[in-house]
Every structure is written in structure tokens, then in C-alpha cells.
Image (cartoon, rainbow, N blue to C red; front, side):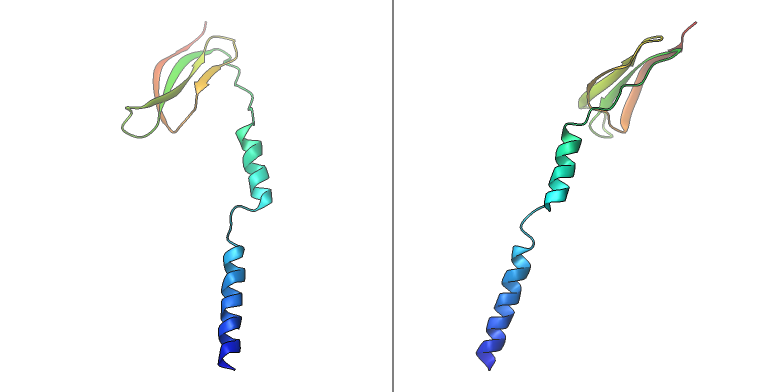
Length: 93
């Protein structure tokens, strides 16, 4: 009887371990879609600006920028983060 309980416990542990092997297929598909997603860049309107983006709050590792010129579509290089410094901003006439 005791060996049956041990085997049942081992079988349960093996089944639980197999279920934790990685991401679910639906999550992998979602991530793949995000990796290739292209969002539309904003239209600048009557604004002109340049914003630099950094990797963290130390503002030492530059990772990208966004540039807007009057009545044009914005230019983006690298990536945007929440650590941003506006280098230039003005309203177009």
C-alpha cells in the first residue's frame, strides 16, 4: 500500500513539472505579433521637437530619439522609454 502512495505522489509531481515547461502557444503568438508590430508615427502638426530616450533614470545610456518638424510625420530611431529628455521644443508659425 505504501509503494502505491509513493508512486502516486511521483506521478503527480511528474505531471505538474511537465506543465511548467514554457510559455503557452497563445502567449508565444502574442509576443511574436508584438515583435513585428509597427505603430503609426504621430503627425507633428504645428509642433517641432526633439526628444532623447535613455535606458534608465541615470540618463547615461542613450537608446533612441523622436524628432518632429512642423507639419511632418515624426521620425523615430531606437526605442522609446519613460526616461526622456526634451532637447528642443517650439510651436510652428
